[in-house]
Length: 97
Image 1 (tube, rainbow, N blue to C red):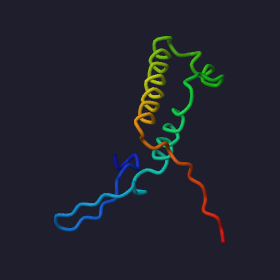
Image 2: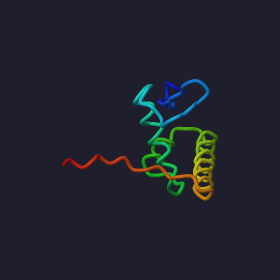
Image 3: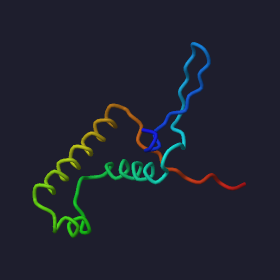
Image 4: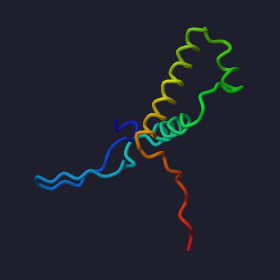
């Protein structure tokens, strides 16, 4: 989990355990790709023109597995939102004063 930048911060002392947000530890590129993948599954599942070009040389079974995974992840995202889980927030730079 640390390799993917998914390490929660922790402030513990004795019997009290307090966990915070995700730290910046780990591989920043892997963490960025993971975040971008999560953002990609918010929309409608579809295969774009570039994806069709990339999949042209692949066997049909592999393309079917990829499509099934895309459907599964988009439906999982929708179910989480319906249950009240927060959608990802847009990271915006703070205004300069």
